[in-house]
Image 1 (cartoon, one colour):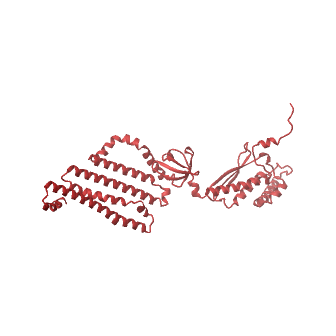
Image 2: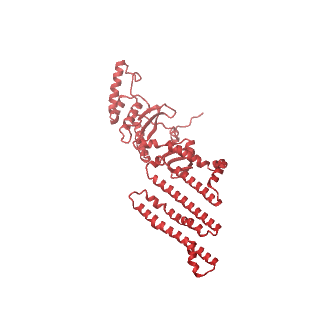
Image 3: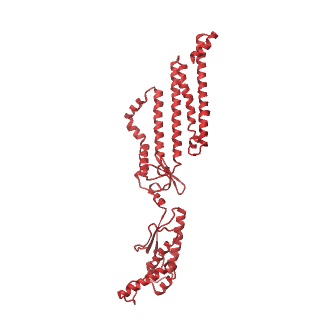
Length: 419
């Protein structure tokens, strides 16, 4: 190009130095013009139609590449290629300038390639998150380590260009800096290893509800990164914890409960020991009118009468033989009521049991599962059940246990005794 321009200038009879200077300047402007033209062609003839084609396609996932301007980064690389290919030839007579132009164009080209690959990783991660598998096998940490390596190698390339050294010379010197690198990148390395363990063992996934008392965590995981995990607590605050903490410390994952489709109710009703007694005929007649246990009462009476008659039991004393009690009948009622409840599952563990009496009375524990895992529905079901059962206790001549309050002591009343 330079020789052609010189041939065009020679007929004007200009001085040799002036002609050469004009030729170099003209050639440089021509290179800049070609660089701009390369940018415009790449941007509006190649990248533009490609982006519009992606937006018009049936699949919505590839729209991410257009929205995140992934391929537009390549349009910025085109001018650098033109200048790198033609610039040194224009300034061949000026070795220092030619070297500067060559190095600068390579630096710019390296930067554009790094930014293009960074955008490509971000877009690929965004597309991956649209698939259901992303919740069970998150790759955010892998994407972050890929970007870390990308910028690391990009920085090595930039240093090698600036210092005019082979990149392998820098890698050879890294061996002596291993200890320093391990210290500097300790958290990313630990986080990367922890991320692999979490993913490989399917310990946590995005969307899992976890509890971690050490960090006051109680909420859903919204992001699993290279060095941190973000959890949105139920009070709408966000807690960020180190990724390796999920490996080193214990936590509770409620995913199993969500996958089974049932949530446990485990709560006890404490009854006053003094209200426990054998059932009289009047009580049994009254209990037999309760629909949930009417058949139970009839069958139990027949069973106990047959047993006592066969054993020759003296029925004049209630402690002889086998007799029905109000607490046992109440326990049978609780079980029948829960089995008839439409929101209590019968495919899970179903248990209504009496626990060891304590200073707080006799506990009747309910251990069942609801047919929903929705928190609001679960709390409503549990509250409705215990509202009914607590109100039903007096119908069985039982009393709920409650520690005495100030009103109880005041009801003792009476005149003070004289010493």
